[in-house]
Each structure stands twice: as C-alpha cells, then as structure tokens.
Length: 589
Image (cartoon, rainbow, N blue to C red; front, side):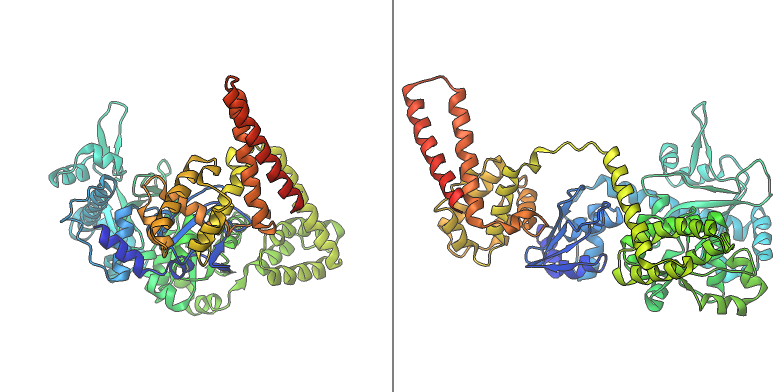
C-alpha cells in the first residue's frame, strides 16, 4: 500500500494540482498563495514542487501533500481522497487485499448506501404505487416530463410513521443508524419515526453522484407544516457544501466555463429540462465558502440568478464577499417578467434565453440597484449610494477592476476619484481599529525571534541548491545543539549524521527517513523561508551569530541556576568569553 501511495504522489505535479483549485504565484523555488483554509490577506500558503508538499504559515497552520490537500478541500476521508487521486493518476489500489480499516470511511460508505436505498424506495412509491398519485399529478402540473422525473430520481414519502423505517430494517440497517443519517426522528419517549411523510422527495447528491440527503416538499399546502423539510446536518450531509444538481451540471459547466446559480430545486430543474445544463441551486440564501471551493474546480465564472428584492440583493452581496477570495468573475441575471426561472420558462422561453445571454457584471448590478433605491438627485441620496457602494469597492482585490469602479462611482456621485479613494481609506482605518479593539494579541512562544531565526536558517539550508556543501560550511560555525527547539536540534543532528555518511544526500530522501513525529515539522521548516518576513533582508552570517548568542545566553542562565562550584565558575567564564566574541562579530556585521 505504501508503494501505491508513493506512486500516486510521484505522478501528481503538486503545483499543477493545487493550482487547479487556487491561484499560485512563483516565489523563488516554491509557489505562494492566499491560504484557502482560513481568511487572510497576505499569502502565507507555500507549495514546494521539489518535495510535493504544502504548508500554511498563517492562522490555520495546516500542511501536507496532495492527498491531505484534497481531504481538506473536499472534507473527505483519507481513503476517499486516495481513491480519487488513484483514478486521476491511473494507479490501481488494492484496499481490500491489504486490510485497511478506516472506520470513518466505512461508516460514510454505509450511510451513502442507506440513502441510495431510501431514494430508490421513494422513487418506486412515486412511480409505481397509488400512494404516489398525488405527487405525480403535482409534477404534471409543474410541466415536468417523465424523463426528468427519472433523471433527478424524484420520489414520494408516504404519509406513514414507519414505512421507510421498516423497509430499511429489512436491509439490515439499525434504527440508531437511520436516526444518525437523518432519515428518522427520535421522540421524547425514545421511539423512532420517519422524518419525511407525505412529501415530494428530491435526492441531494454530491459531485460524485452520491446521495447525501433529501429535501421533501409538502404537497397539501398545509400552513401548519414547513413547505420544505431537509435532512439535518449529519456525518455525510453538510448544507454549506451542497449544490443541488452539481452531479448533472459538471460537464456543461466546464464546457461553458460558467455556472448559473439559482435558489431552489425547481429553479434548477426547469432550466435543465429546457436544455440549460450548467445550472445549480443553493440550499439557503447565500453562497458559502465550501460551495465556491467546489465550483472553482470547474470554472472561473459564476452567474447569479437571485431575486432582485432587498433580501436577494443582500444575499448577492454576501455571495460576492466569499467569491472575491477565489478570484471569480461574477455576473448577475435578473428576471423582470417572472418571479423565478421556473415561472419565466413557462411564460416565455425565448425571453428567458435572451436575458440569460446578457448578464450584468456584479458591481454594475449593485451600483444600479443602489441608484434605484435612492433615485433623487440630492446630496442625501448620493451620500446613501456612496455608503452602500464604497464598502463593496473596498473589498475588490484586483487593482484594474477596483480603479474602474472608483472612476464609475465618482462620476455617479459627481465627486473626484480622490474623494472616493479617501472614503475607502477611511473605511479601511475604521475596520482596522474595530479589529484592534476586538482582538487581544498574545504573542505565542513560536513567534519569538530566537525560534524564528532557528527555523529560517534551517529552511535556507534545506532549500539550498547544494545543501550538502552549504550545511557543512554552516556547521563549521554552528552545532546541532545550538538549535534550542528540541525538534530542530533532532532534525539538525540527524541531517548532519546523514551528510557525514552520504556526500550526495537527497533532501527528499532525508525527509522520508525521518521519524513520523518529525516529518511535519521538517516540512514546515523546509518551506518557511518562502514566507514573507523581515529576515530575508538580513545576512545569513548575522543570523547564524545570533543563534550562537541565544545558545550561550541560555547556557549562562542554566549554570547560574545550578549550585556554585569551581567547575561551574570555569564553564561560566569560558561561555561568557564565547558570548562576548559573538557579540563583537554581531556589532561588526
């Protein structure tokens, strides 16, 4: 198995692979980006093409290889990521033969299989039984044809308290499992009953066509019950990650290099029936970071088809704040002759076709919406427009796009571009002050200059074109014990031993030989010099002498803490002389 994993890693160009998800920029021998796993403005995410690793030196501190990246990006298990990368690289995995036990993966597979059976059960009830007649009539009234009903695997949950429960029990599933998977509800008395009853059922699938959950729409119009009941958060279903129809839309999204995003299942299904195959629907009112990460794999353009009312515009604003992080080109389509895409296609398919072919850039749409909201030609109205649009422009990261909309807003408000820039600067200062007021910064130990220099010098050595020679030269001055962090000392000691044995040591081979607990620390050290910090402006000689200075100071403190003895006094004198010598060198540098 170990050989298969290594083969997969060898066949993956990590820069090309991670670069298909996020934008990477060259930084010496490595590549950098803004970390996709936490919010930040300065890039702290570093990728090494030589060693096939990545590490974030920002708040999240995550790191690993291509497999770990995919696990984090898609929130999947190690085995799932391995299977996907094996498929991508053409490596044949023999998981069953080697007895890998991944309980999380096994449970996830079991729950997906349970949902698949539940979906087949609901679909059978809809298509083949009298119980599903009402749902069939409802679908006919919505002008949905039979092929679409089969394509989306619509179903019907009968008005029964335990029909699904009894069906799944026959398939060897326990009630507690069904409850954990969101298919049953637990009463106060501890008994279980079906969550979905008397509803039209929509299976909720991921991009790999796995059924993760369900959405059930009521048919009776009963005001006492919610219009939709959805699977709750489970070990396999996370609302923030769900995009309805993504399993059917992927190929067309890639082909068109664009995705239309709508609200609600039927607003995705009706366009699909009319031949528009690059539509997906969100579950909720705003795009999430997780949904955008998924879409970024297939396109750099998104077109929002949200309601143009106040709530819809606020939803669009929240969506662009997330989408800006991924450098999407964002556009908007508004339907002025119907309430949603479903109704628009029934009223006038040709008009719908024309409207979606002419989307408006997102910032133009929001400026236009603000102008409609405050139409008066007064100073007060222009002030209100500015208050709505300046925060949006302030978040634009691309300088060309930002300058364009600064100029546009200045023309609308009849003020200078400098005035708009001043408003943006004022907003930035206000936000910064609010952040400072909220955050109490406690400097962690790892941020100390002493440890930072340790890590930086080792990183420079390990990244050197000829680490063998460089390391030998440095260790004429430094010894492994000078690195006061225990892990750094161990890594230095092991590396020096290897270099003494092997004059042509390969840095990647050395990393693989390290004990498991030291490998992630070595990876972090290796990439550290590629991050932004002031040490890059300081000479290596000075930093090496500083390491010695810190080492001697620690030695002096240790001796002073011990009992006095002639031997200790002699040691103290020698170390103090060494320290003075180092400090002289630092002054001369």
